[in-house]
Length: 219
Image 1 (tube, rainbow, N blue to C red):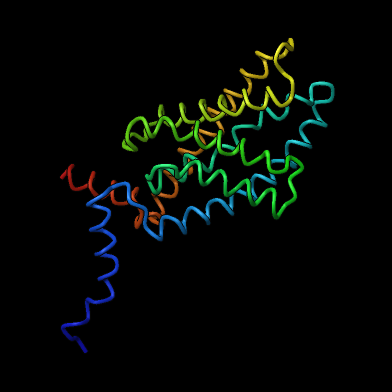
Image 2 (image 1 turned 45 degrees about the vertical axis):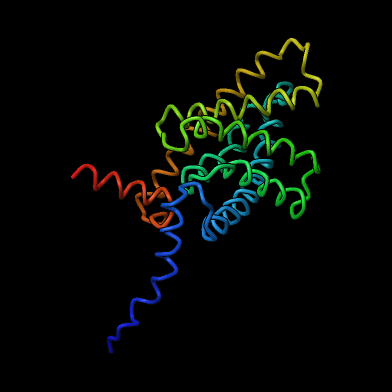
């Protein structure tokens, strides 16, 4: 039976939408929940990547120390995905840090709490290109720059911790890591985000509202 009160369940959504329109960078509860979910899921995936790193380093023999640079971009991927979906400041940084907490606290990462620092640097570098566009540009180039800067930021921190400065392989390490960042941490993230958009599972987030606005503008 229809009553004048039947639209009431939408009231909460309308309030959230109005708040978002008033401040496009305002966080909502569903944004935060999604961020935690992404951080947890990729925290476990990052642990899987560590196992892949170990296997690759064995296969590479004497050059095994370079394996981490080939795979580094994989540990950047949650940041651009989180930023692209919720389009809120610090989304990338927080997603990476949450993932690192899962790795350290629940999966026993050998890096320990220092991983939190690396994660924050990865997130900051990955998020910076989007932030410079005020979270409006999600082109292939922006994603590529995201992976490049995320890999670069954490490389110089890792180089300090691991004593790579002054080594003959320093520039080779840097080049491999930057390429990995662009491909795995940037372009692959773009493919994943585009795939999620096609499924419609992110329509209730900022990325969905932006697409809806673009559709209206093109008509």
